[in-house]
Length: 107
Image (cartoon, rainbow, N blue to C red; front, side):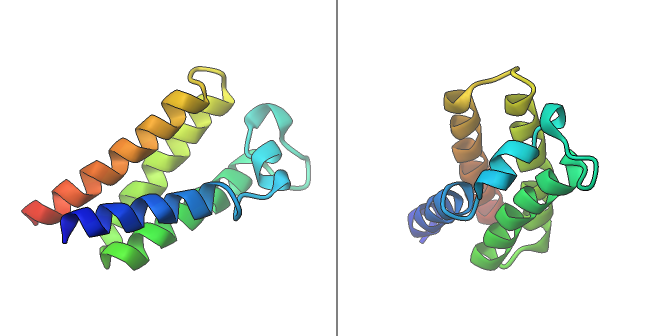
């Protein structure tokens, strides 16, 4: 059961991070490319919210959805700031999914 959930969380992440992340989101979620009309943190929040929705729908946990929102926002922010790269970014996202499954196993 837990392995199945992990699999669906990874697939949900792939859908949210690739086909659902438009060119607009990929570009303007970065603080350095912010638009006057749409601040970068609105765009980043929309992207992180998509991930949070996927985690919430798949786990049934509002708490894990909230944690996903916060952690995804921070991980992507560090990548946009040049503090990490795409490989570290994706590894951290996968590790979050491991953490969510582990937390569900405990709660």
